[in-house]
Image (tube, rainbow, N blue to C red; front, side, top):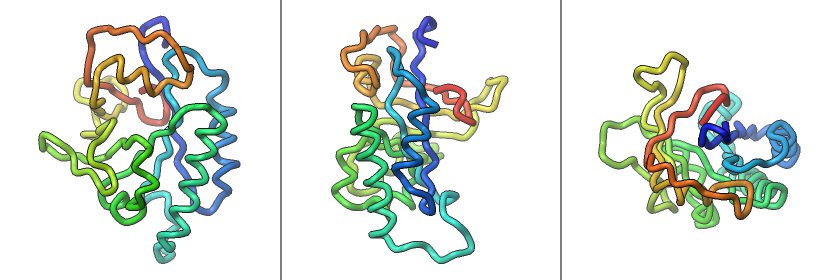
Length: 181
């Protein structure tokens, strides 16, 4: 992907019933050695991660698990992980100021000009606008990056990697099942 000036990244569907450190370690092993244009790991937290039909777990328990995963990503990968969630779950579980230091990838399939952003965030890094990208031959989400190519390079796993400004700002597509971002 690097030879085509594409960024790539991985995300971890964080499970609350498994050790967060072990989950991160597994994801890091799967990602392998960092290369230029590799993005830091995204921690994905959404309703389907909860074991149903159990009652929703306590907020404090969920927050401890997510913070443990985020800190382990930071220590292991030497980069700042991104949090992926939707507004409802972000508002319910990620409302602590401790989460504001992590960039937000918000899933908000609205036709609005801006997504709804849960507290404690006031802005977003990525916006998943739809679960399908029109005219794509493969299943793909439609995501927008809130910045330019230089800003996107700040999410790189490789410190000091060369950020090429391709002139393409703002729009990313991400293939489902972790194939491409």
